[in-house]
Length: 124
Image (tube, rainbow, N blue to C red; front, side, top):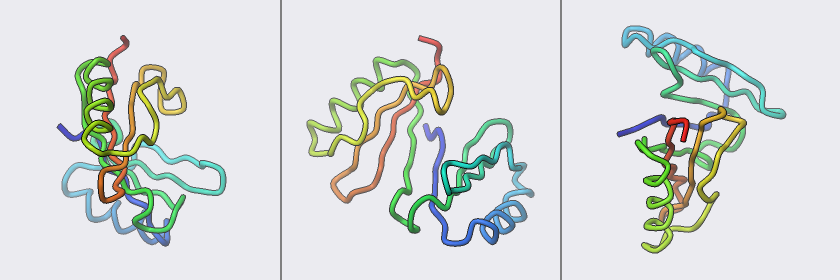
């Protein structure tokens, strides 16, 4: 159901060390780390990123939950339903090549302002 969760942190080095130690007993390790402008993004998982920390925004501002969709049609339907239910568009359905060639996602802000995503990794 959950594809990944992302949190913004105040001190990326401190949080990187904390989560590397705390998640190791669960089988998680750092699977990727990259720069995004002035920000650092650290991705933890067993094989693929499942938990992400970054110092892009103030803590709490860009936290989000990404729900896994099996098809692109489900991503489209999620976006339409969320907007119809009072969500605010934060990026309509489409490929996000910066995350991968088959990363098809849509983003909405829920009524409280949380960034909610649906993502499909299938090729088409």
